Image 1 (cartoon, rainbow over the protein chains, first blue to last red):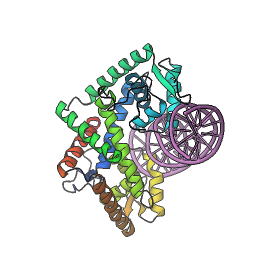
Image 2: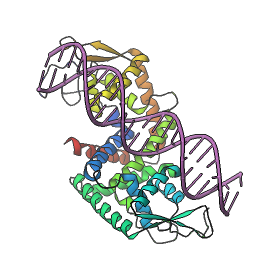
Image 3: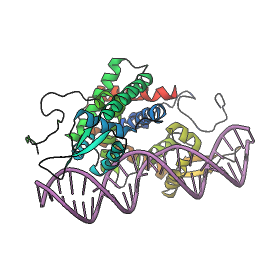
Image 4: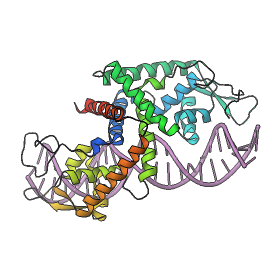
Length: 160
Length: 160
DNA sequence: TATTGTTATACTCTATAACTATA
DNA sequence: TATAGTTATAGAGTATAACAATA
């Protein structure tokens, strides 16, 4: 395929000039492409037995903030309450989390990590670290820090 | 809600210490949150009448590289060929693009932008620029450039 | 055999709306 | 009234697999 000159259209980077990529100039486009790339590598690396990203993020919240409620997790992750039910069901079925009653408010249920849950969290965290270390091998720590800082600043825009 | 001390769990940034955010340390997590934030603003700003992101990106390719084939567009955008059919159908129904026959290869169809298509592209581009200018108002041009450069480097990992 | 366009299909992720029980 | 958890549902976005026509 490469090296052929039979094509009738102009592709970027090939026939010399024409380096005017409209999409490349948008942050949103670059953001999506980068997200897709990292996410695909994540799935290849962790997808087999490890938890899907959102389940890991929920487990992470419960481990870090024991007795947190589902609503609080949803708020912190920026997703809907309803979306959490299945995730917590899943984590509870695995024995990683238990729903405990909250004295003083019978609407809420405190999410408590089990020891298995904490272990699973640490192991998943290790796997994800390995995946990112591999994926970002060509990045300096400074580049990664700069990238994450800028991404947090992006997120901060909507949070006001 | 704020200022209350009745909660039984520890949330970040509130009760002093506990600033050990596991998720925040991952590029992938920050990438996703930032992508979601920008995408939501995009939908609010453009979603009414403007084209969805992927349709705009396809139109953009056809305008920039007239006579490009569907397969080439898919390759450049990093998506599946099959996904393009509906997008091009849509753009063709709007009169923005026509499928023309390619002399010498009767399998392919060259995608040619109409004048309406070029106009629509320019207008959409202007809208998206306005959305990004607004959203990234607190970012310096240097920050935006750095961010985009790093995001392109992320994308290059899988392509390299 | 490989590639282009196409269709049919199914899956993932997530939001919306409505309900219940509490507060 | 407002909030926590839940359910049912629907939609966007996208991938997979197969096929016909052509190379």
